[in-house]
Length: 203
Image (cartoon, rainbow, N blue to C red; front, side, top):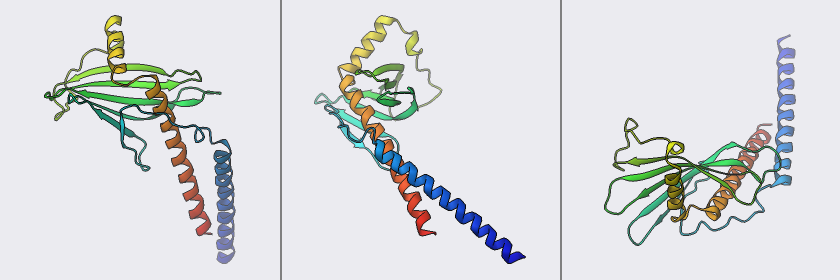
C-alpha cells in the first residue's frame, strides 16, 4: 500500500496548504479593511532629515546638523505594544538620541521611549542619559553615570528642555510614532502577500 500512503500524505498536505492559504487571505483582507495607520498623514520631522528608512529593516535614522557644526542623530524602532484597546498608536517607539558638539569627539547619548495611549499628546520618557568620551570607541565597560530617574528632578527637567530645544518635542515624536506604525504595517502586509504568492505558485 505504499502508493495509497503517498497519495494520502499528498492529500493531507494539500488540505493543510489550502487551510494556510485561506488564513493568509483572511489576514490580508483584515489588514486591508483595517488600514489603521495608512490613511493618516505623517507630519513634519522639523529640520531632521530621514537618512535611513530601508524597507528591509525595522529601524529609521534621522539627522540634522546646525550651522554651528552641532549634530543630532536619532535612531528609532517600534518596541512592544503598550496599550490594548482603542489606542491610536499601540506600539512604543524606542529612541537613541546622540548629540555631538563641534570640535569634540565626545557624545551625549539619550535612551528614550515615546508612546501614545490614545491621547493627543504622546508620553515621552528619558530612560538614560550617557556621556560617551569618544565617538570612535564605545566601550560597554565605561561607567556612564546613574539612571536618569536617580538624577535630581531639576536636572531631569533641564535635560528634557535640552532635547526639546533640539527638536525632540511633541510634533516630532507624534510624526515618528505614526511613521513607524505605518512602516511596520506595510512590511507585515508585504510579507503576507509574498507568502501567499509563494503558496499559489507551488500548488
